[in-house]
Image (cartoon, rainbow, N blue to C red):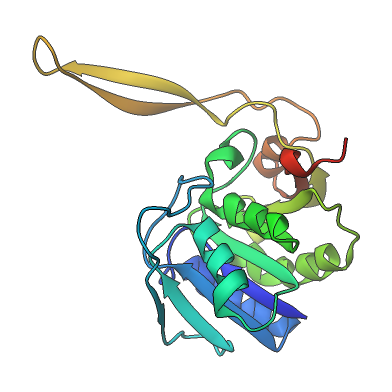
Length: 239
C-alpha cells in the first residue's frame, strides 16, 4: 500500500510529523508533499497564475521522500499524483490538523480539501484533525482507526473525516460514526471599528453555536468520542 501525506498547516507542523510516525507503521511506502507554510482555511483553492515551486526536504520521520510545495493543499495532491510520484498512491492522508474540521467548517478546510482532491484523482482520501496538538488519543487509537477505514469499502464520491476530542485519556468515551452537523461551530459576529467616514474595520469574533444531541460530529467530539464520518464530494455523486 502506497500512502501520500499532506496537510494545510505546513510541512514543518507538529501534526504532519505525528501522522508520518503512524503512517510508517501502516506502510513501507510513505511519501509527503505538503505546503511550504501555513495554508489553513484556504478550502479547495489551487494555484493557476504561477508555477509551483517544489523542493525535496529532509524530514524527521523515515519516509520514502518528502517535498515542500509552494501551493495549496489541493495543489500538493494534484502535483504529487500527476508529476512527482512515479506511481499513484493508494490513499491520501491529510493532517493531522491543528483544530477540528466538522460541520459546515469542513467546507473551509484545506485539510479536508486535500482529501477531497484525492477523491477527484481517483484515490481514497482521509482527513484527520485534533485540537491544539493534543496527541494522547491519537497515539493510542489513530493507527487502528486508519487500518479499519482503509480496509472498508469506499464509495467513489466520499472521503473519511476523523476528529479527535479535546479530552484526557480517562475522559475518552469511544469511537462514534457520525454525520456532519448541518451548521458551523461558531456564528460569524463582526466587531465594527470606524476608521473614517469612508472606511471601517470589521473584526471577526467567534461566538459558539449550541451543540444539539444526535449523531453529529460536533456532539460526538463535545462528549469525548472520536468522530469518524463520511463526507460526500457532491460533484462525483452518481445520479
